[in-house]
Amino acid sequence: MNILQDLKHLKHISLPARLIICKCLLIVIGLIVLRAIISPFLAISSSEKSFYESPTLDLFPGVRKGKFVEVPQIIWGLNNQKIAFARACLTAKFLNRSLLMPSLSASLFYKEVDLLQPIAFDKVFDLNKFNARCHGFVRVARYSEVSNRTEPFKLQKGSGRRWTVERDLDQLQQSRLGEADGFEVIHVTGKHPFLWPDHWPVKDYARIFDCLAVAPEIDTEVVRVISKIKDAGKKARHDAAVSHNKKRIDGLKNLPVQYIAVHMRIEKDWMIHCKKWEQRSNLKEICSSKGEIIHKVSQITDLRRPVVVYLAVADSLLEDDSVTSGWRVGMVAYEKKKLGVTDIYEKQPYLIKSAIDFEVCARADVFVGNSFSTFSNLVVLSRTERLYKLGKASSCGEDVGLSSYAYNVIGDDGGPQKWMTDMLDTSLQRISYGTNNVSCH
Image (cartoon, rainbow, N blue to C red; front, side):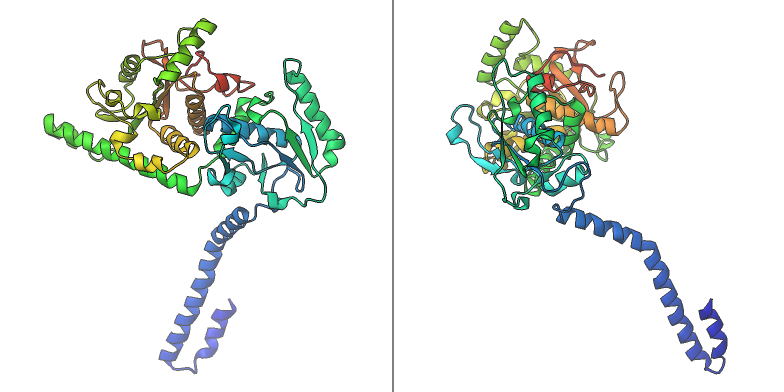
């Protein structure tokens, strides 16, 4: 190296001075090597920051910049809104366009549309994370990206029995290739997206749902609720240590605190609805009483006991203390009120309350729900997608973690049926409207 050769010409300099010069040169060489090692990591961090902060850049292959789809306000329950959003995203993808950020509904009204409270998509979900995670698949754009140079093309969705899936797909194909494609914005009118005919496989919906991350403020509340559940789990262990073999319990202290989440549908209006549903469909595995649910959940042996059972129940059941009573030994049941987290929920509108409960259930070590509930179905779909990412396409006969069960369907062992979503299904029909044909795949 030239530096080492130059050192030969320093003989006339005193020894202390030469030592100082050599140390300085070694420091410089060390800094150069260190920069070479860490610069790739700094570059990655920088690009990620640029990606998150610049959603308008043309970083989305397969989605044209400057072409958009606009949909009506998305309404109904949280999970119906998530399905409607995903369907709108996939429609925009089919048209090779970005979806303009839709307005969701914070309140829950099925008929009084004028009472709906709109809430921006990015108040519930993290827009930048969504676009980063769904990079190259779908994209959601802000209205600030629209130039407003031309009026949008109005695409009227058909309705009635004559408006078949085939006719709807034909309309989309014409919009992709015909006159509509020349417009900057295609504005879809008529029925809201949940009621649009379904053209997309489950795996495409799963990919979009996997891109959805709740907004940071909501995630903070989710973490608070889960922390309370785990505190209750620690207390259950301590109480068990007092009344049982303390040495055996001491061995559990360093193990992670786990919990079961149960989506318990036993409120009065649901029971009336599902009884009528059973009569119309001639099915007997839709409704379950509190006693039947407790019996099924008690047969699950995935987790060590004592274990906390978090009950995701309707607000109307929070005044009924009997909901948390009657559980088997080693299963300690809590709902929002008993857990002491009603203050977290009370300050939130309906949609965000549901989003918190959804995340608490989706992140549970074991989830138990009703296979005719859209909420339960989307929780299981989320957990199945995570298992697929881990290379687990089946939970039959083994404990693969993230177990899910349907308490309304009897399994081969007489307990609740183990449940994974059929990721090969060609439509979202069974997830949207329910089925008792569930399995561990």
